[in-house]
Image 1 (cartoon, chains in turn cyan, red):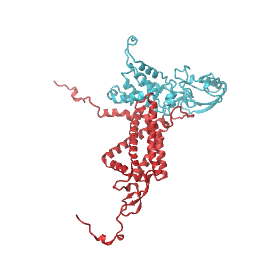
Image 2 (cartoon, one colour):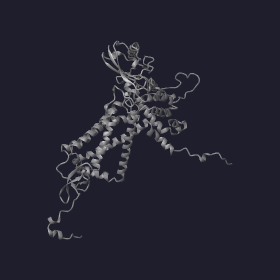
Image 3 (cartoon, each protein chain N blue to C red):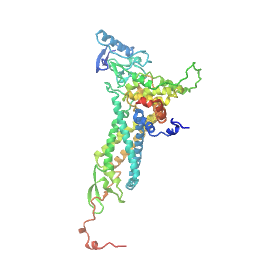
Amino acid sequence: MKLTLHVWRQKDQKTPGRMETYPADHVSEDMSFLEMLDTVNEGLIHSGKEPIAFDHDCREGICGSCAMMINGMAHGPEKGTTACQLHMRKFHDGEQIYIEPWRAKAFPVLKDLVTDRSAFDRVIQAGGFVSVNTGGTPDGNALPIPKENADTAMDAASCIGCGACVAACPNASAMLFVSAKVTHLASMPQGQAERRDRVLKMVDQHDKEGFGHCTNIYECEAACPKGIGVKFIAQLNRDFLTSSMKVVNKREATGADAAAG
Amino acid sequence: MSSTAPTKRSQPTNTLPSGKGVYDWVKPFLTTTVGMKVTTAITGTALTLFVIAHLIGNLKIYDGRDSLNAYAHFLKSLGPWLWVARIGLLVAFTLHLVFALYLKKRSSDARPVKYAYKQTVQASWASRTMPWTGLVILAFVLFHLAHFTLGMVGTTDARQEMARKIVQVGYMDLIDDKGRPDVYSMVVAGFSNNIVCVCYVIAQLLLMVHLSHGIASVFQTLGLNTPRIQPALKRLAWGIAILIAIGNIGIVASVRLSWLGDSYVPITRVGDAPPAPVSQPVGEQATPPKKN
């Protein structure tokens, strides 16, 4: 199949970028989207041009590296799929495809489609530690966890931190990501000791990174390749509300306020 | 034995938060994005409840002139409590507006470079236009206050009680036969203008769109949403929004279709004076009033 690609090209973080058009003439329907970009890049290299830079790693949909807006949709048109697992059979012959990097102030573009997503790491770090006992391996089922809670924690933990929620959100909010991380630990008995503090710290860090706010538009849910639902954002809001009312003294003690500036 | 070290007597007791403590308690609701959303949701709920109460009061117009005017008179007679309610509404409205606009500004800044290809998957039109429908509603509320609370927008024909002359007066100068402000005639007169009616209908439709997202959104923001009840909440939000729109637009339509109002000419006391003495018999004028 023959395609026309409109790709965002940007030399580095400081240089302003622009959309450029490339033909992709020998595309097989069985190629993944990244393989298609690989062949286009080969052509560019042969003709002495700079190849399109994009993030990728595992190419099996579990690492969260590949990050691109395809026709205005994070990870492309297929539901619950990362860009690397998206196949060209999802497109028509002769289609115009727009490929852009994640757009957010908190995710500065480093080159072409590559963005710096370390803001997510700092949000995770702000969440702090989980108090667990050291020593030998705990006995199996020594700590009873209801099946439902374990499932909820697992669903939340399936977030791969790709940033599609931020990219798809009209407000560039990372609330789905933060809520998945908050709910993951809040669903487990091990996460309870720091639960109240953690949610406030992570939301503070989220705001400081320059993400927008959540307006319950739910585009993130549709974009998430792992099917993280907005029910986790409701859980985050619940935790945030109860924590805000409870932890006055604890926040002072732990210096969360000082850290929040 | 005495000691210079501070004892527990010199330290504050650990009681309810006070001073900095109270500020710390409120701070997340005024400074974080999630907290500001919660404040917006709570004030939005208050405003929605006001809109519903306002509509229920307005429906008294179908019960006739006397009923609506009596209700309006009752509200005015609340005195200081009316001002408590008005200031409460003003605070809720201001917080809702300021926080929503601040957050909107913040989210615009959060994406400095826009997408070349704009696409949404499941976002509703209502959810994406909240700031704009909200701003139109703000403009409408200001117009509505000028129109019916301050009576600054239009005038109407009214009959002077004594002089029996027809004069042009503002809506605030209309009174009914019991001497109360004639709200009924004000509404009928107010909706006699085509442009005003179009403004009201457009504003009500946009309010419906605003509420269709807002009401469901409140539950999510306050953490009361679950996947099980989410479809029901969506329907509830649309249901309430549509009922409010039907109720309010219905009043405009009823006036336009002449279901409300009649050939009654409202009364006023503006510029009123007893009829000129020339037209009255001399004998009657000379008679001094009887004293009981």
